[in-house]
Length: 95
Image 1 (cartoon, rainbow, N blue to C red):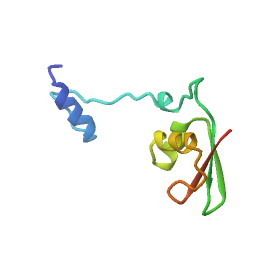
Image 2 (tube, rainbow, N blue to C red; image 1 turned 60 degrees about the vertical axis):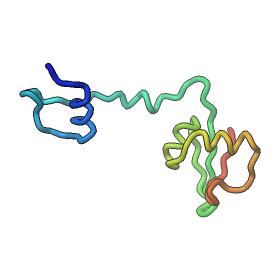
Image 3 (cartoon, one colour; image 1 turned 90 degrees about the vertical axis):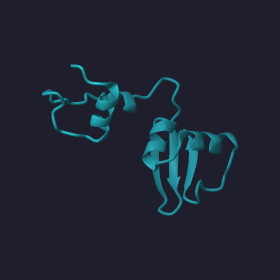
């Protein structure tokens, strides 16, 4: 195809629909890879203290994505045995 990696990266980053060198490109993604839960995952319950809503997630990673925070933040919260709500809003509990 004679297209540089950088140009391909920019093409997909900008989500362009224009052809490159006569080729119309599309990105194939594996949506299952981000949603698959490994055997080592630990289920977590997230409690929103403002609304008293309780959500259950099969892994720290999926909970973190839903809350737009880092999975490490959840891990540290639980490891240190914290009881105050995270960011004043969420409590986490292992299931």
